Length: 158
Image (cartoon, rainbow, N blue to C red; front, side):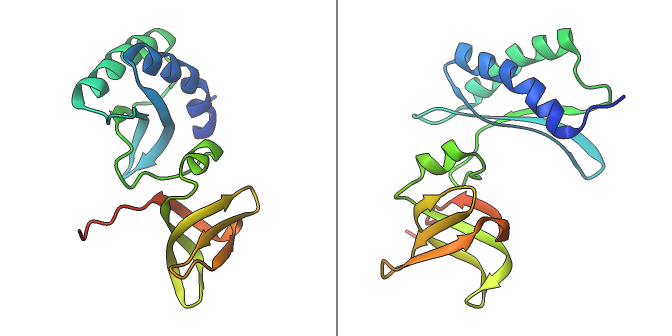
């Protein structure tokens, strides 16, 4: 019987954490997903000074050995190790905690004030709501169930 995608990610997570520690990185996320008819096991890594190709290669080598030995996925898939990038997706409580006081971008399922996209300084994030400060400092609350995606914000127009 095939495991669901979240169960696969949960099973792989401790192996990925161990590989990241060995390679001098931290684990940002593990996903097992289907895109364009293909399965992907995606491990996203981070470190304060930024992730380079050698970091991705090191974690990939360590993970390949574990995945070959444990063989946790009973269907074909591609394995990827990457950086979360400057506009990284914020998913876990620790991601939001790390970005308190920083600008983030929210994409909503339903428009608020005429827009499905909002950018502001993250003031609060919990299981019920995400609160951003608008440009004038006014707090704006978004119900968590209306948030499709949250990402770190990087102003490319400098």
